[in-house]
Image (cartoon, rainbow, N blue to C red; front, side):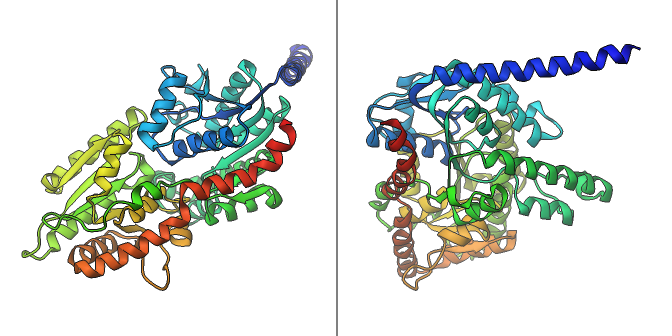
Amino acid sequence: MAILFIVPAMVAAFCAMILALVLRGVVGRMSRKKAVGFFHPYTNDGGGGERVLWCAVRAIQEEIPDLDCLVYTGDHDATPQSLAARAVDRFGVTLLSPVKVVHLDKRKWIEETTYPHFTMIGQSLGSMYLAWEALCKLSPLYYFDTSGYAFTYPLARLFGCKVICYTHYPTISTDMLSRVSQRSQMYNNDASIAKSVWLSRCKMIYYTFFSWLYGIVGSCTHLAMVNSSWTKSHIEKLWGVSDRIKRVYPPCDTSGLQVLPSKRPAEIPVIISVAQFRPEKAHGLQLEAFSVAVKRLDSSLPKPRLQFVGSCRNKSDKERLQILKDKAIELNVNEQVEFHKNITYRNLVGLLGAAVAGIHSMTDEHFGISVVEYMAAGAIPIAHNSAGPKMDIVLDEDGEQTGFLACTVEEYADAILRVIRMPQTERLTMAAAAKRRAMRFSEQRFYDDFKSAVSPIICHTSR
């Protein structure tokens, strides 16, 4: 008998929740502000995504000056003035006017630590909760996601927003499905699952279901800009809205770095690694390759120096950085390795200007802004032989080689040694070709392509 009362009560509660959601969306539609709301919960991550954010804001301010720009952020110390200063100090981007800030209190619901298991679906649903908070606080005409939270798009449409996104990489891809199917161990497929047939099959079901959901929510965007050929091919396949997808290469500071002289101090060859201290960046592989290269180096040549440069977003990143420092000691290369955490853009430029090579090791890096920065600065890139670096960046320019691609520790070590042993004239020739190649990914190219992509939506509906 109790079931006769419980089931109707549950149905009634669910219907009430849906009704409340619809009503709140209607209220949000009626109170929309003439603004572009950038959903970017972490405005201090220091990576390529943050550079895209500030360049996108700048582009909107240039194109439509009377349209307010606001940023939804979970950083409670963020102010319009501090964010404008950060855009200049960290990325060299000067905003035409400070952005408005909408502070979010529920960011913990998108933290990976909140979901020890089923992290993707947990963070995705958590992003909807966070976006609900954001849109209830202020509903803009245009909802612009610059962090890859596709599950927020249907909600933004419910609030009557035009939805635009800049997608750096798909939340799930066919490559991820392939690795689980092949039971390959990686940072997002741990050993316990890779070794078990049953667990791998369960994860395949989970991933397949998630990719289906991801395709549905992604198709709710009015415009999807993607940062590379690799990302474009995956998003087209997953979202099925190829007519709304535009490839817009991310903004790289090629002009500011191009002026750096290609000649470098010969006493100690410096190899630089620029990346956030995140697991997928595979810093450990770089350290191991550097150690192998140092051991195989001719005694007549000077020992190189490896400089790790990156930002720490949270406690987990700081712990990874400490593990890396401990590993340098374990490999007995700590005297040749430096660590630079959360440095200013000016200091980064100084380090890039002294490096003979730049190393990158993330598998399936969607694009690889750091690789372009190496090339623009005159440092020979040694990048992972996959995705963005392979398909878009480290390609021959005018028939001349622009860098090296590698996968394994041995391949990276070989590339490091080739750069160190390279005669200066040969290195300068390759560096010059790399500089020319990098010009294809300039900030100005981003501004031009970005404005061309968004103008049909924003200019048409804002007037």
